Each structure stands twice: as structure tokens, then as C-alpha cells.
Image 1 (tube, rainbow, N blue to C red):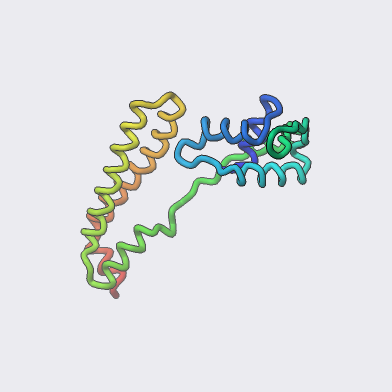
Image 2: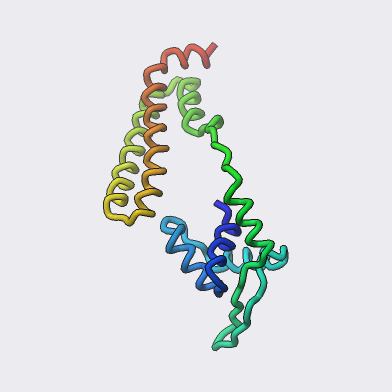
Length: 174
């Protein structure tokens, strides 16, 4: 995820302080990985330097001055470009799990056990996501669906690989 673009997009609703941006980000996107304040302020500093935001106001308080940021026209254009650029599908051609299976075969370990342990972990994770989805709002449901669909694809791969272990063993131990 592009944190800079996400913060810019949040600023399109109107100027905000870094604290407010962090809170909005965490509420909408950071359920599992909230932003650190330092990450917000370093990102805002970079966006300011690049002309994508400007300081709309500076307010004195008990602590350091609070800057309120506003998106610039260049920032709006940058968000628009980012939103309309498709993400490249991420093929998992260098899968850690595949590496573990092949290494198990190469070292005469039980690759089926590697697959079984991973299958159990995937199923555990899917139960957690399904429970979260059941209790969540629409945004949480969609996020969980995305993760669940990826985990289902992984499970299909695990089953396919388990069915082909003998052929894979022959192929990698030649």
C-alpha cells in the first residue's frame, strides 16, 4: 500500500493535522497495522517537499506547533494517477513454502508433513478471518474476503502439491 497516496487521498476531504490523518488512516485501513506517528510525519514531510501538500495553518499548543496540511492540485493529480493505474498481479514465483517443500525433499525430510502443518495454519487463519468478517462492518468484510480468497488459493496449491509430491521428488532429486 502506498501510505503517501493514501494520506493524500484522505486530505482531499479537507485539511488535517498529522494526528487526524493517522487516526483516519488507522480507522479506515490500519486495523491490523496502524501507522506510527513518525511514519505519518516523515511521509508528510516528503509530500511537502515534493509539492503534493502544503501547510495550511500552524497552531501553537502546549507542545510543539501543530501543522495542518492541505493537498495541492499536484497532489490531487498524483492521487488520480495512482488510483487509475492498475496494480500488477503479484505472482508468487519465489514462494517460501515451495522452497520449504523442495528442501524437505532434497534433505530426505517428510515434505507431506511440511504441507500438513501449513494447511493447518492456513485453516486456523481462515477461521480467525471468518470470525472477524462475521463481526465486522462492510469494509472489514471486504478486507477479510480478499485475504480469505488468497488463502483458499494457497490451500488449493497445498492439495495439488501434496498430490504431486512423488513426481516433484523425482524432478528435484535427479
